[in-house]
Length: 243
Image 1 (spheres, rainbow, N blue to C red):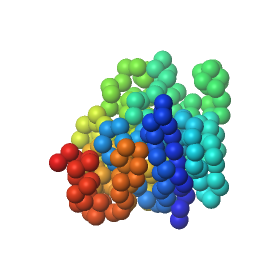
Image 2 (spheres, one colour; image 1 turned 90 degrees about the vertical axis):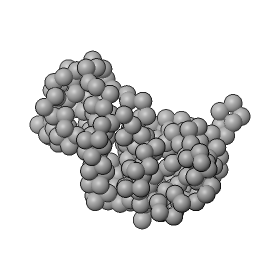
Image 3 (tube, rainbow, N blue to C red; image 1 turned 120 degrees about the horizontal axis):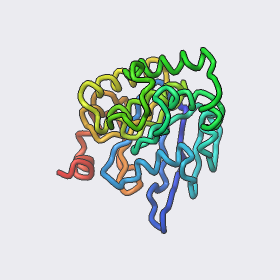
């Protein structure tokens, strides 16, 4: 079942089309990877899908409803959550509070001074246990290692209990044991029939997890298909692997 689509999606920067007439379909219960060389438009695509950037033309279709523009603050209403290539946390807040903020429909300052319900704390605990950070819940976010920061951002996305997860290089900078944790989480989300859009440069992870792959190059769709088909194509090897 298609849960998210783009139709002729275009985003320009100073006349350069970072995303150029891009049309794809994303299914529920699948891990769909977007790959391509640096500067191919992958993160720009995720930014338009999440409302971080406004599109110039085309449309985004969520559960059959077409949008010419989407807004970042409305994404949770559509069942969409995301992580960022450059982790964005509340540095002066604890690990636990970083998760509680996204679980409540309040601004950051309210969240700092209001008590949280037992339900919210339980949901936060589940998310943090999934990434192995519950025991560190009272530590300030600024004191975390790079890998732990990535895990905390993933925990915040999990706590949202979304239907569509936009994950921008979630494995970057992670040690092998952390990669195993995130891999397991993504498989569990797939079993729960969530839709995952994954941007990643680790080809081993791509081969292991992907149900379907879209390849971007210079903002355009270069190829698509199952991993064992796409990654063998000469044009993909030349464009992406530089061989």
